[in-house]
Length: 208
Image 1 (cartoon, helix red, strand yellow):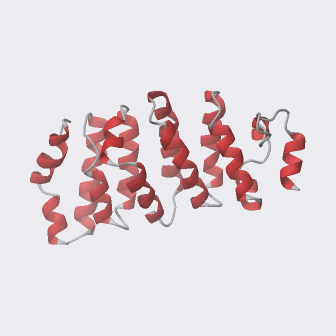
Image 2 (cartoon, one colour; image 1 turned 30 degrees about the horizontal axis):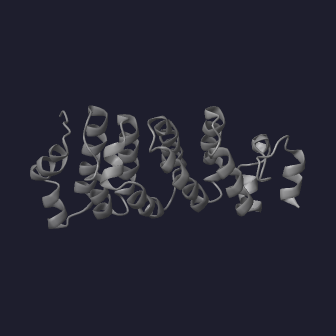
Image 3 (cartoon, helix red, strand yellow; image 1 turned 120 degrees about the horizontal axis):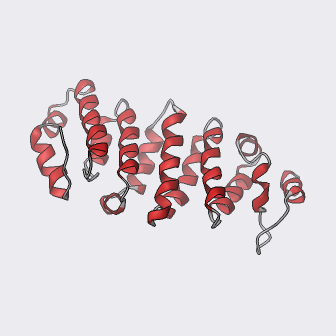
């Protein structure tokens, strides 16, 4: 019934007859996520597949409201957004998505760490040209360090250090972990030797 109502109010459908793009002005945020997650996924898949950049940006920004209802739903949309970021133009959407995650203040960041492990292998991070995107990835990892320092360090070490915008959050991650974990092996990895072997080896540079 809800789906029929949305379709009736939409002004246009795509060729497959799926959810119309124009229903973005309707309750495609937390309300819809609470009522019908399958429909909400279809709505966002449709929106994110559009060529209209403004429409895609609005869809990503609206996920901030959805985050209040379902972290899993928001993370599911990340699969498509990270895929779009494989093109330089798509990095802007990824940046906005990372800001949504950063501002959401979740109680449990572990599901995000699991997704990051899948989304951001070494090669994927090396393809990212925007230092702002890399910095926001690290800013999120900095928060996650409170719950899982070893996993955060593993992910952070994948990130190339190409600019001071990236070096700052990386240093903050190291500092957070050193304050919160006393494991000798982990602390050894945080030594100066780790900076040389991990950061510089990937062709980046950083400033103190």
